[in-house]
Length: 110
Image (tube, rainbow, N blue to C red; front, side, top):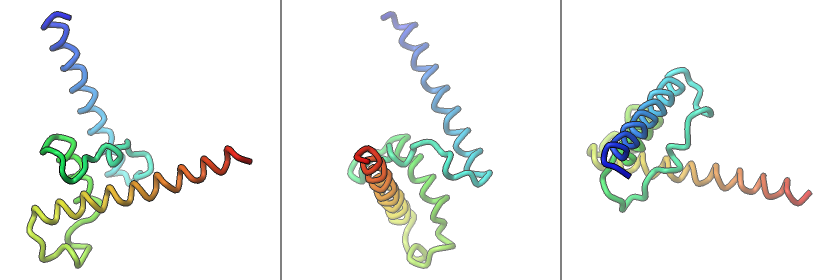
């Protein structure tokens, strides 16, 4: 693969990511939370490196769990607040995903 082809693929990939992020924000602002992409699924573990996915998960977490609405977040520094909402988002997704898996499994065995 030539360098030009590789750069073009990277540009196309970035454009797709930007479109998806814009689409998710539009759905979020319209209150259509169940139509959002699976960004929470790809939320990195708490020990992973600092990258765009991590920032996206923190952004979603801070919008879903605003500091003003939850007493437990009032006294936390920004770093600890971001950590807590990211972890909370991952836990909620894991619970929802587990329930969906159980429902799908039970339907298969009927």
